[in-house]
Every structure is written in structure tokens, then in C-alpha cells.
Image (cartoon, rainbow, N blue to C red; front, top):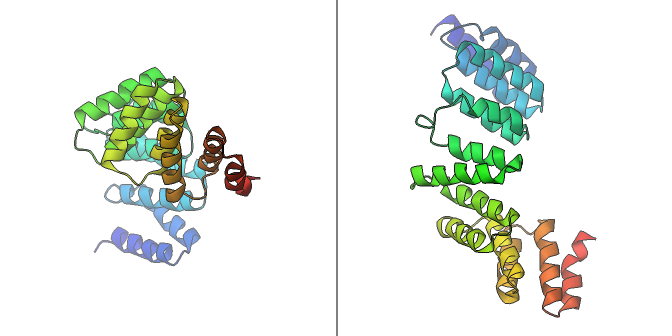
Length: 236
């Protein structure tokens, strides 16, 4: 074991003991060591993320990527990190440096970024490309769900319905799928279908305020104002 590996192992011990300050000091000292700088950077970012030190984590990403511009795994990780912190314009720039061929999830991530930047037409192109290129991806339910959301923004109800059902077909434990289905059926004045789906949504995520409010709205349309009032009481 080299000296640097011993240091890294010691930092791991501090990390596991949640002695983050000590761990950070060691990981920072390893950022200039070629053989281990990537592992040190990843651990530093993890600590800064735990401590909600966004700028510190970004600085580590930038420092590492400035030396390793072709590391598309790290670029993808950086983009995902930025998306999680809702830095969509910055994530767009990072994703632009990644190859579609090497990173099949690029189109999905770019679609998510464009969705939150409210560029729904481009987002739909990204999602369609991802779905076409990756027919067996475990991320397909998410791609179909975002596609459904894009169509819903434009009130293209049939396309919304088709993609929400595709998402449900692959993975039926996401409350958002049933919320979207409920909204579509409500818009189509198919209130019993809407109620069935909103109940599934609430069952999967009982604390979701949006689903609870939609249940009240649907019940009111079905002529059940008392039940609607009872359902939405937790939201008052």
C-alpha cells in the first residue's frame, strides 16, 4: 500500500465516523495526486453535498474537470448534481460537452434540463431520442413520465395519456404517473377514472398536497362536496 492509499484509507475512517473536517483535510491534500485524485474528488463532493456546501462541491468539480476534460463519467455526475440543485442552465452547459454515444443517459438529462427551462419542444426531442436509442433502459419510466408532463403543459391530452400509461406499464409505483392520469381524465370529464387514479396516487404518497387537492376537485365535480371537504382538510 502506498503512502497516498494509506492517507485515503485514513480519510475513509474519518468519513465513516462522520469526522468530516478531518476527512476533508486529507482528501484535499490528495487532489494533486494523479493516481488517486478522482477518488478524492468524489469523496470531497460527497461530504460537501451532505453538508449542503454547494459552492465548495462545484469548486471541486471544476478543479477536477479542468484537468480531466474527457472524463464523461465525472461530467455526467456534475450535470446530475447541478440538476438536483436546480441549476439547469449550468447543467445544460456541462451536458453539451458529453457525447450521446458514450453516455446514453445524456438525452434524458438534457430533456430534464430543457423541461425545467420550459423549452418543452426541445425537451420532447431529447426524450424521444432517448426512448428510441435505449429501449431496454431502466430509466424509460422516467423518460415517459417527463414526456407526458411536456405534453400536459401543452394540453395534448392523448399524447400525455399514452406516455403516462407507458411509464405505468414499466413501473407502477410512481405516484406522479397516477396524478398525471387523474389530471388527464379530469380534463376529459372522465371523473370516475380520474378518482381511481388520484386514489392510487395518494396511496403511494399520502403526503402529496397536490394529489390531495386534486382529489377534492374531482369529488366536487362528482357531486360529493362533503367528501371533498373531508379529503382536503389536512391541507388547510
